[in-house]
Image (tube, rainbow, N blue to C red; front, side, top):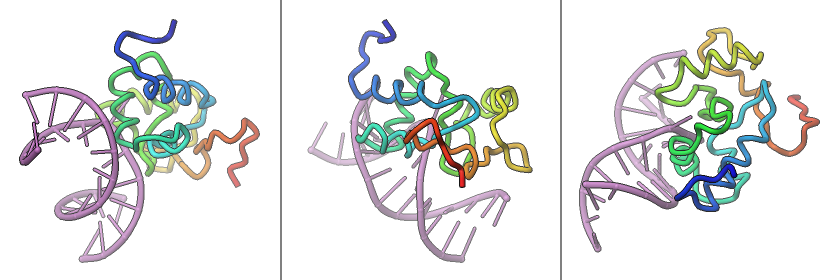
Length: 110
DNA sequence: CTCTTGACGCCGG
DNA sequence: TCCGGCGCCAAGA
């Protein structure tokens, strides 16, 4: 179904995790890497660049809140549309509030 | 097998 | 806050 030719288990795990990120929330590449328990931030980034087209890719970004390189404008448009908390500058996501650990939908951004 | 590249992360300066 | 450098890990040339 949602798997394309050439996609391995690792890629599927990453895409699955990304699909679970609720609207208005985000996860850093490193967060996804730890959640799937393999590779690292760069590997997650590779998967997103290759197969991210079928998932809410804008909800995965850098640890400092910066949108994916080369997709800043597209991502910001999404954040504004789904009410993702942005920093005063409006160029980065407020990770303190928007970061989703994947623990449970009952998130609690202290 | 070696070198370069990449939708990254973190620590200085 | 912005920039540069180093570390990390897998894929491609």
